[in-house]
Image: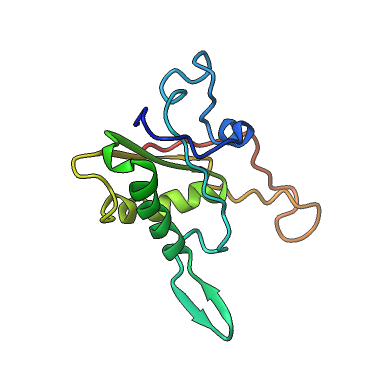
Length: 147
């Protein structure tokens, strides 16, 4: 949280989906924090760093570059608290990258860091109308995890 830096997410409907509503009534903890939205664009949960046959999987480089840019251009170096979060595939990326981000050289020294994956753990819902799992169904499951 750094009130002096700019908010890099101007899409409140996306933040609401990720559990970061701007309303103090709905979200008393994070409503006034700075938010950064990183579009999921690499297909590998921001973990890839490889090229093959003309295909480039550079999600880890994208994430690293964003972290360095946040320090250089947006004052993240002055942040006292950082929360890594995401929903759906972004939550899977949160699970996968939490330790890597926590140890990244761009993270401010002494920062309080945590992760808040929002519904990124999927149950095997095999509610298919045909096939070997016909009739098997899992309903109404949502999961939060605090790391």
